[in-house]
Length: 135
Image 1 (cartoon, rainbow, N blue to C red):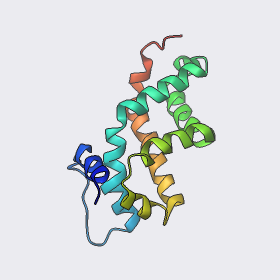
Image 2 (image 1 turned 120 degrees about the vertical axis):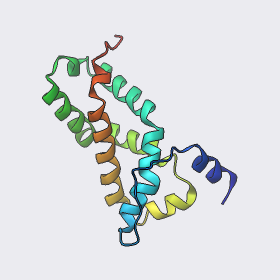
Image 3 (image 1 turned 180 degrees about the vertical axis):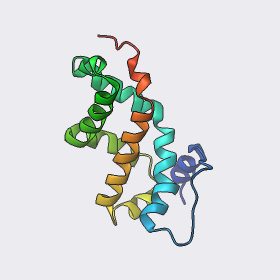
Image 4 (image 1 turned 180 degrees about the horizontal axis):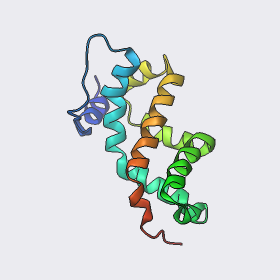
């Protein structure tokens, strides 16, 4: 393992609630070993990026009810391809080369897991976006 890989692994947070078992699928193992720690590490960046997304879309999000805000988050990530690809890049850029080689074997399924995790993380912190966004 090269220095970059060791450095990336060193800065990732440990997630005690992520359990690994022998009979879990490769994708579930990748999700728990790689995606969860990276998405947690990137949390502040993901919040800042979505806050900027809100600003670029004229702060419409801020006028919505809580229920509609949750739908908005989901739609923004699922339907705005450029935005989704940007978010994927923030996660994939934190992969080691070894992890990337595992990722490309089933990238479609892992992308779905990744984006669902990002959606849930943003939804769980929706109150963060209620703070005024500078225009």
